[in-house]
Image (cartoon, rainbow, N blue to C red; front, side):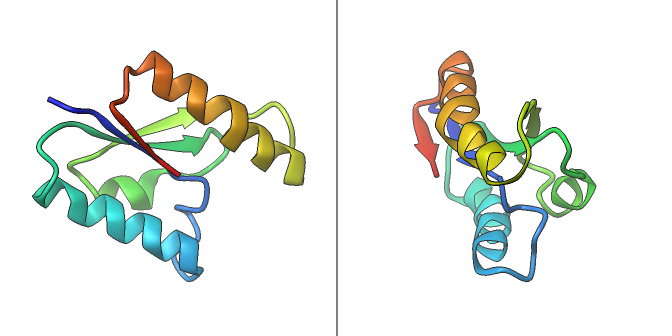
Length: 94
């Protein structure tokens, strides 16, 4: 089964465009994707709402050693690709 991994950096912001898109994607994809789906989030993010809204996806917190804009860049450019590789993801959606 192909494994799909999603960058969930904005998943805790349901009123922003990217946050809304990420949550809707994670909620709807299990109906059409025939494999495991994981959403990668920064460890500081509260994953409770996302886990409740999307019970068919795995929410995976990742450590982010930096804060602010540099933390976001580090998360997206280093942490997410490394985690996806470790998880043997077939598709990485950013």
